Length: 286
Image 1 (tube, rainbow, N blue to C red):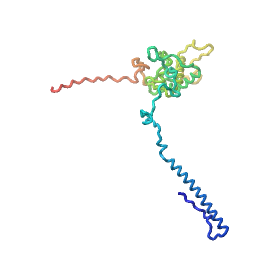
Image 2: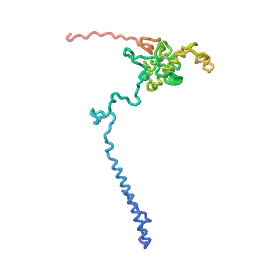
Image 3: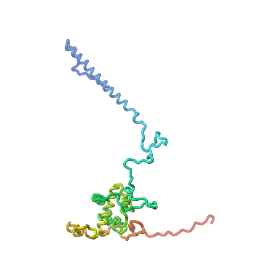
Image 4: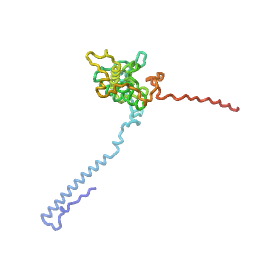
């Protein structure tokens, strides 16, 4: 409750007479009038706020995720997607672009040695950038499978320059980046489909760079050896042979019976343990 306090200067003095007393009474009346209006405004505001504190808006019917709803006959608040509809931004009419496989004549998926879009210099540069960020720690920057993590005891990754990888179609790399393979996790969260294809194209460029011959060089282009370039750059060690560090776990030849990527186990298998059979339990009553 608001209390209006009258300014002592506005109170009419008992000793005032005539005009001065009448003027004081008018000031007192005006002060009470203003104070009354203020009290009315505050009262209406408090009434409006009090009416807004009701629970009607909070308890209004609405769909809460993963809760029951009586709006639909099946009482399910989470509604299934309408049949034969596609959400906005999820129209994937080019399935090869998003999967890297096609359906073969036998009904099984097949990989193709085909890019879904033209490969330009910008595509290769993008693929090189993504490859150096996400792939080189395991596969190294030249793709020989001896990345930095191998020097810290990790199992070597696939070598893109062996006969197995050279024979694989280009969409195989896209499929592996999408779903993972063996010890390699998938990179679908880190790489968009277009970036995965760009990395696959750059892997092909790496394979060509490591096995190219003088006949593959266009006419008029000067060919320099890596040793000369490394020496001129002040890093002659870059041209040295790539050797497997002694800290690497993988020190055994490949074993194709263990499947692709056909790497031997990280450590020698445990010795076979033979448990002798126990004698059969005697029959009841014997």
